[in-house]
Length: 399
Ligand SMILES: [Zn+2]
Image 1 (cartoon, rainbow, N blue to C red):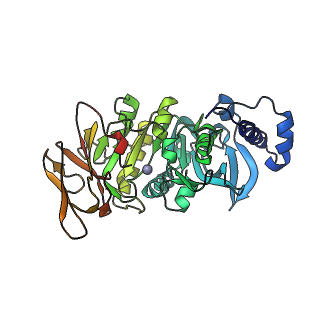
Image 2 (image 1 turned 90 degrees about the horizontal axis):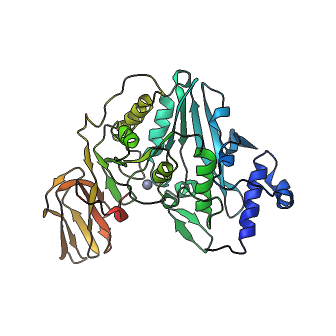
Image 3 (image 1 turned 120 degrees about the vertical axis):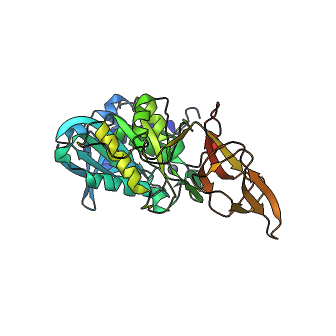
C-alpha cells in the first residue's frame, strides 16, 4: 500500500520507541517525541542494533524487560534472562518474548536458537530449554541467544497463527513475514521487525529456527535446509535425524531472512505439533550441541551425526493432495520408502463408499502425513521427499 494517512502514525510510533529506548517512559515522551525527533534511525538500520541493551525499566515476574539487546554489554560467564518487549496489543500492553542469553566467559561465535514462531509447536521449546540447561557459560567461548515464544499470542492459544484485530478477526502466519517491518501494516509484521532488528541483528552469527509439523500433521525428524550453502550444510548434517529437505521453501521464513542478512540458518522440524516428543527431542539436543562444538562455543567431541542415522537428503517433495472430502485411511508410515505408483491412502465418504485411492507419483520416503482423519479437497495427505531434477511443491510444505 502507498503512503496513507497512517504514515504519520507509523512515524510517531517509531519515534516513541526510539525515545523510550533511552530509558524514559513511552507515555511521558509521546508528545515530546512528536515535536523533537527529526532523525530517528530507519527501521532495520545499523543504529538500531548498536545502541546497546535497552532496559525499559519494567520488571515482569522478576525478569527485566528490554526493548533492544546488545550481547556485547552483558556480563560474561553468566546466563541472563529477559522479556523482550514486542509489539503492543490492541489494549496497549506489550507482547513479551522470553529470551535467555548464555554468554561465555570468552568471546566467540554467537548462535541464536529460536522457537515459538508457530504457537502450536512445543517440542522446540523443550529442545532449547534442554540445551540452555546443559550450557556452562564459564566453559563457553561465544554466546547462545535463546528465544522460546516468538509468537506469544499464537502460543497462548496453542495456535499456528497470530490472532490480530486490525480488520476484524484475522490470523497471520508470522512465519511468512520475516524479516518483518517495524512500520508494517499489521502488528505481527511489526513484531517480526522489532525482533529481527532489535533482538537478533548484530547479535547473531548463526541461527537455528526450530519447528514441528503443523497441527493435524505428523512428521519425521527432519530439517528444511539450504544444502547449497556450505555453512548451512555443515550444521544441518550434524544432527542424528532422519531426513533433510534441501529446499529454500517460502520467502519470509526466519531462516531465509537470516540468510539474506548474511547469517547461515536452517529450520529443524521436531515431529508432531502440540506435544513434547520426548523420544525425538534428544536427537535435536545432540545435534544442537554438535553445532555449538563445531563453532567452538563449547568444548568436547562431536556426538552422533547424520552419518550415524544414514540421513536421507532430498531436494524435491511430492505432495499427495486430496481430490475429495472424506475420511482418509493412511497406508504408509513416516520414513517408509515408497515406489512410484504405490497406493498410499484410500478415502471413504460418510456411507463407507471408497471415493478416492491415492498413489505416490515418485519413488522416495514419507516425510509427513495428515493425521486428522477427515480432509477437504486440496488438503495435502502425504508428503514424499525424493531426489529429483526440479525442486517443486514448496507451496504445500507441511511445516
Ligand atoms: Zn512451524
